[in-house]
Image (cartoon, rainbow over all chains, first blue to last red; front, side, top):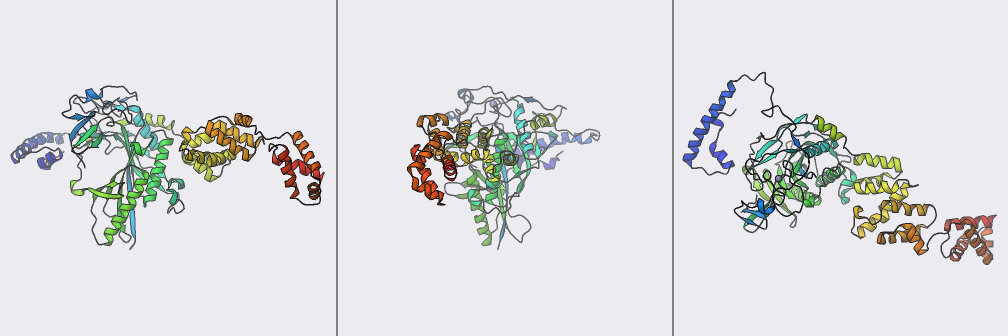
Length: 96
Length: 484
Ligand SMILES: [Zn+2]
């Protein structure tokens, strides 16, 4: 479990592409810090008898068969798009 | 100074399922943009992913074909990044519990570029793999002058990522690896692996270091290659660029570069400082996968692999090992051969017709074996006509050309053209008698020991029969008559 000091709000904000002011960064650092502190309580639980698992419920293999079906038309898919052209969602130019 | 090149590949392969990985939208290349979308693949709030059983099976099939260890339990994770081709702001992938680990791809001689097949540095090399995991493909971006357009039809297509050990030592080996891998994927019917359609995509990690240096050089990644020959060219360029830099005493740094196929150069995309930090964590929307049942289903679907097919062709059909290599190299060609050779008296002759006349006719007509105008059974019939002496080898070429052009069966063409070879011994005997009577001198010469005179008489028999007599038979009969 992460320690409060491990949380670098400025860095996480950068990864999430959120612009924070210095004041916001400090505020969130403090607030999220206390959330993490609360979660720290889990460290106190004895889990030596619990088998490690990848999921909260012991359930496996939930599949669907490979049968295609239609859902949205292009028009429906684009109905919330702020910008569109030629059936494409138009976004700010991004090239990596 | 000499340098050592180390190459590792990350290959992305689109599985040929009918529907997407986590939703039931159809997978179709070239459809109207955004017409194969739903709340799940558009990342709308509240939509939940459900795993495509067949995609997981196909990944296990691939793992088994490549000799991987299949994980008893596997899970899916979220790979977080912010980019418009991924509307959820994370891609569902596998981080620390991939479906397959280890395994290898054998590099066959014919998988190397044609111009490099005579100078293979490590014959029978096997390139070892790190892992194969399953994930979802991202949307396709179209970059315009001042904006980017996004098509989500591709988003969510099942995608396998196959990662090799840094165990490839030349651009030619990388070429051979991709060719061999593509062949196996096609054999296993898990992907069409068409690079032009983006069904097989490849990122290369390449580093160069002086021979005396133990640790690897700076890892440089090349992206955006859309053909196997492009991968070879990009690597050759990059090795030369890195070697040149090292020789000038420059220090190389870890970076990502793009490949411009038109110019034939790589260019800087980003340096290590801006490397991603994906913050992987298990996807709570998906439960883990146990492979026990999958393994059983997958094992039943493992096809005969190229290596086994080559060996069997040599044993079962007595073709040369080179011919077996060429036939097994292309699954469609191998199927064609087996259908044609089934029941043939000399399958070797069928193989010869396929590998010589048929292949060259196909290539000059810009066709492939899948749209070959001559069905395999019809080719077998032609070969049988020659073997039974009904037509000569020379006539067969003429019949073959007509078959290829018109698609008509050989027997019909032979009848229409009246080119059936005369193999009726009685009729040929009559022509032989006629030839001997009309040409007493050459007949006497042959009897006196002049072997060449027989050819003259044979020519006369051919003339009398209007070219229809089986020349071999005519020769035998003449010889018998003159000697007897
Ligand atoms: Zn969908």
